[in-house]
Image (cartoon, rainbow, N blue to C red; front, side, top):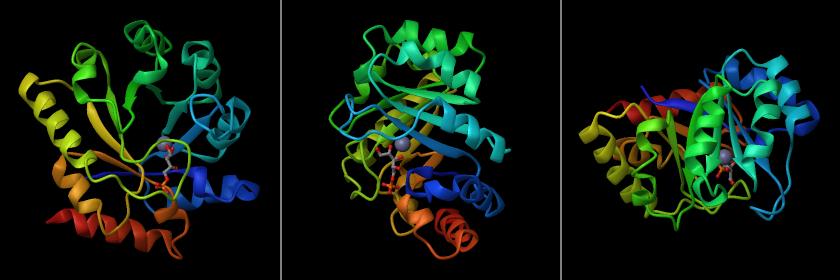
Length: 218
Ligand code: DX5
Ligand code: ZN
């Protein structure tokens, strides 16, 4: 069954704890936390203190998506703040193998993300070492953007490589995922879908979770 990771980027930051708990109560599997530094992406969001506060409110795992330069510098801080999965961008790490090792040595799950213009082949040598791959289906930086359809081919290619080699990595897809396109994303091979605006802008979170699960059943 597909896992749903609501992104708190579209939550109400003035009542973050309540919004995290509401997502959990509605049946979310993970809480997706978007960390942006104003350098790797044009936007600035949150850092370790906010992750720590979110951790207090959540009992499901925190899926921390680092859209930052020099990710190695901050891995420990995010682990100490309560991250359960740390995703770094392939494009932001010069020594990706070392970065992935650093994450795992901290005792959390390691994931690597690809921007829309980065091919799946860039991950060939790191795939055996990661717990998850995050395929970006928008250019990272903002919530509420439109899904880039070419992401579906990337998900399919990645799924084939993982299956063929018997790797353990899960596939997460992030950006523009909505009730209306989630079945395509899951049929292409996604194990986890991030939903920001489509989740937090909906009027009934439980109903949104239910609709996603229904659409992905067949
Ligand atoms: C975009 C972030 C996403 C964002 C998704 O850079 O990584 O996680 O919150 O938002 P939606 O689902 O609205 O596209
Ligand atoms: Zn994200």
